[in-house]
Each structure stands twice: as structure tokens, then as C-alpha cells.
Length: 462
Image 1: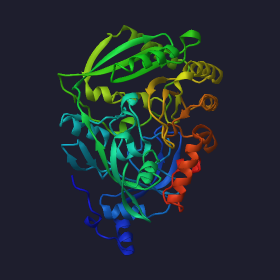
Image 2: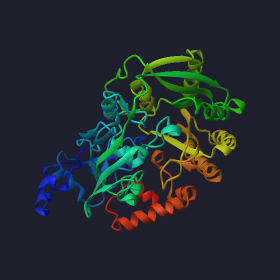
Image 3: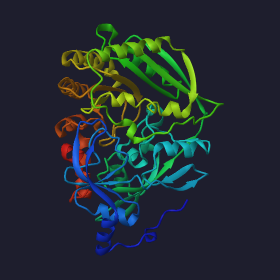
Image 4: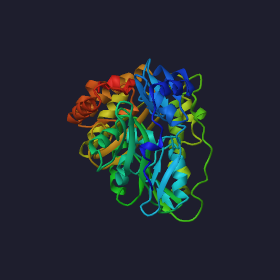
């Protein structure tokens, strides 16, 4: 696998930059976060050539943008310039001996999954939706339902190339420009535009997934069960009804998954970004949410304990279920995702139950995962149990999330910055402590002019 040399691209003079910028597809647009709680009017460029790309990146207050599926405005800024990477979606090289594939940032993880499976390999970390891009996966350092085994996406990135309009293009990785690499993985796109990523693929254990259901009486017991089964399964995650009270708070289902042989891995379905377009009205309310959650709970109890399906369906469960997001309507939804120390899990569940009751918020979806590893700068990583919950974007959600902020800080937990469009700099600093200060100081030392700008950066004050 050969590294693309910088001299493969023509040097761009200032005159060339202006001409290329005029040639690039560019328009004004209102860019929204995936949860539809924030919108920023910005210039949106969709370059198709590197000449156009570098010209667009020379604009002030610029930020790179992938599929736009992050929950906060990490890829847009008001009166700024968002540069799409979706047209840069080529596979640039593959080393059969090491299993390392080099891709452009616009390659989707669905495409990466297909590429890998065709070679009897598998991306070690996959999210729940196939349109997320490789560049976005690095910028947010995403995790999957096997975080306790595979860690985060960045743990499998062997290197990347990064372009900064004032500095040029850099190679960086764990052993080359390591500080810059560490800032970039989980750095929200603030160090520059990723032009290529080297991802280590893993051997494919089997083309099918065997999913086993375990009914749990409450959220506390679910966490204990998942800690217990995590040593024997390859993936584990859950679903919970947080609209119940008392000892039944969080009753639901824990799922464990293992690979098996036989059958087709793909059984894929076409996916379109328009499938997530919100309905003009909110379908979730005080009547429908309890009914839907109770109905799903009964369905899972009556379903077979074990089922087998193809890997595409197992890894991308929201494909075909986009209506779930659309039903939040144009006002959108809020998601809170927090990682609590495992020794304080029982305490966390009690506090969360009280906060849900006090706020009056309706919880449409809740899930937990087991985490292993170390904390890294502003990455959502570390040791503990991760709880995620979704609620309609209402004043009750604001009350609930303010309470959850205090609970998370008190218990020594972390909130996932990429999943929450209202976390303040002060709150993030309280949660992340010295890791926040280190990230802020190193980022500003690397780029004192702050060439890359987003609404997320302004809110976090980094």
C-alpha cells in the first residue's frame, strides 16, 4: 500500500484558489444537527476535486462535514463555511497481509463493512447506521456495541493524513506526529481536514449473528447482568422502559450477540439520507410514549429467546426503522449519554429514576453498554457502564438534562459531547477536568488562529 505523495497534487496559487472556489458547488444553507435542535445558516461547499477542496478549506471559519449525523453542530458554524467530504469516497489501498485499508474520509462505514466482509474481514467498530463516514468516525471517535472488547474507532486507526490551509498536509499516527494524532482522534474536526485514514480490519468470525434475549426487572440488574455476560459474548446492549416507576424502573431486555457461520452476511437494504427527514408533527406524547414502550416490552418478552440474522441487520439495526427518529417531528429530540463508574452504577440508577420523575420527561428509548479502557482528552471513553436515553425536545427535557448533568458530575461520570447540543463549557470542564484543559491548551497552541470553527467549538470554548 503506497502513501499518496504531496506532489501528486498541483500546487495551488492564490489565483487558482479563487477560480477553483468559483467552480466548486457552493450555496447558502441552514445546516441542522441530527437531533434537529440547532440550525446554523452557513455556506455549504460540495467539492469534487482536491483543487476545489483546498480552495474551499482556505475560507475563514471553515469546518469539514461528513454525513451530518452527529447530534451537535460539530460540522457547521453561523456565518461560516462547511466543506462536505462526501464526494471523496474512494478506497485508496489495501494491504492483504496486515488487513489495513486506506480510505478517503467520505467512505461510509456501510461501504467499509461491505468491502471488509467481501474479503472475510470486519471493521472492529461499527455504529448503528451505515451512512456515518470514516472521517466523522475519527473526528468523534465513535464506539459500537462491543466497546468493552474493541474499544473506540480510533483504537484501530493506524494513521491518517490531515490538511490544514496554513500548514499543509501531515502524516500522523501513534508513532508519527503522535500529539497531533491524539488531538485529531475525537477532536471534533478542529485540527484540520482528514484526507485519508488507515483502518485495521479484523478477521471475520462468522457471517451470521446469534442474538439472545435476557429479560431484566430493572435498570440496576441490567447493568449487573451485562457486566457478567460481557466476558462470554462478543457484543451486548439493551433496551429499557424508563417510564416505569419504583422497582420496575428500567425493566427491559438485555441482548447478547455472537458470530456464527453459515448464511449470507449482507442481506443489505438501500439507505437514503432523506429517510431521516422529520415528520411535520410530533407523534410522541403522554399517551403514545407509554403505550409504545409497554407494547415493545411485551413484544420482546414474547419473542423467541434466540434468533439468527445476517451481519448487516445486526450491525445496522436502525436501517428500515428510521420512522423512530422521524416521529419526533420538526422540533427534534434530545439524547443524553453518560458513562458512570461501575462501582457507582446502582447509585446512578437511583438518581436517574428520581430525575426522570421530577422532570416529567418522557423517555422514548433507553439503552446501556459496558465500557472498558482509559479516558482520553474529550473522547467518550473509559471504564464503566454507559446509559443513553432519548426524549422529545421539550422544556421537560431541559429540566431532566440539567439534573443529569449534576448527577454525572457528582458520580465522576462523563457525558458524551457528540450526543448533546447544549452541554456548556463549564459543565464539560467539571466532568473532564484536566483532560479538558489539556485539549484546549494543545489545540490552541497547535492552531492559535483557530482556522477550523464550529458551533460546538464556540460552545465548548476550546
